Amino acid sequence: MTAMVTQEPLPRRDETNGHVRIGALAPLTRPGWDEAGRHLLAGMELAVREVNDGGGILGRPLQLVVRDTAADPHRAAVAVEELAGLGVSALAGEYHSVVARAAAARADALGVPFLCASAVLDALTEQPTPWVARLAPAQSHGWRIYADHLLAAGHRRIAVAADPSSVYWACGTRLLRDHLARHDGTVVEIDVRGSTAASVCDTVVDRQATALLLLVGHPEPAVSIVRSLRRDPRLAGIMIGAPAGQPEFAGWATSLGADGAAVPFLRYLPEHLGPLGARVATALRERLAEAPSFVAFEGYDTVAVLADALRSHGPDRAWTAESWASVSVAGTRGRIRFSRTPGSGVWQWVWAPVQVVDRDPAEPGRLRVLHTG
Image (cartoon, rainbow, N blue to C red; front, side, top):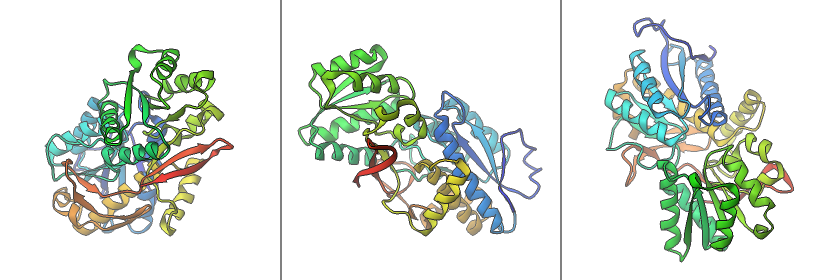
């Protein structure tokens, strides 16, 4: 069997033609981070193809029903409603945290299992729910590891250029500030909404920060700020960081070239992939025609987990609410098991491997592991 993917309107719920359906959410167009969405979808598609090549779900082909969220929470909520009406057995995916939170809320209200692949916002739901689980590490876990890297590198006075109107960026700023404060560190906040790239440079100089973290969108304003920093002689020794992972993708290197190197970011991969991960990496590289990001592995693992649960419990939606705790699946980045964690209302894989990585200035196409947690 081969993978089946569609973004077109589908038949009514009772016209499934024997398929088991998973609804896939991903940002595939702007203003969503479409490069991340493409990698996420590639991982999910590859896993669906392999499930079907192995006999499907109890002899029935698995079908991925794709909806583009375009980083719009309302659009995601509407997509969940539509997919629920089409009779999907579960929902998978999404990259943007605020969008995933909207999808999780509708999935919870409708009683549709949702396995979030990549969004990290701690409060993915307003209240505990049996319907939602997540593969990506919670933001508080990954960003504290990033803060530890800053401290180990000797940075105690850190500027953060962020858009505080975003819940995701605001939470990231708070996490960094609180963790660094416990180690005599200071965070200087710069609101990019009222700033130019030049004024960001001026503030970093005036406040004597040794590092600037970009908690902003890509390509803009991230690209303009990085270029200004690299060309400002006053900031020759400044460390630039992007914990959310913008430099992971080829678009960053294409936009910035050598200026985009030596910008540490978070990546959720182990130091060495096992046999399954290595095989999947090769297949993803062929599918994407470039090196797969950690997001592509998240997509693959999401479908692998759901397929295992569907085989064990059948395609009835009720299985997930009872069975997250019993999941034990060999994923591309380690064995995946779920549990309840303090401060999170969802079932969580504790924890995916976390790395702090940058692009090698001597070879920007090569990634260097700087810190692991």
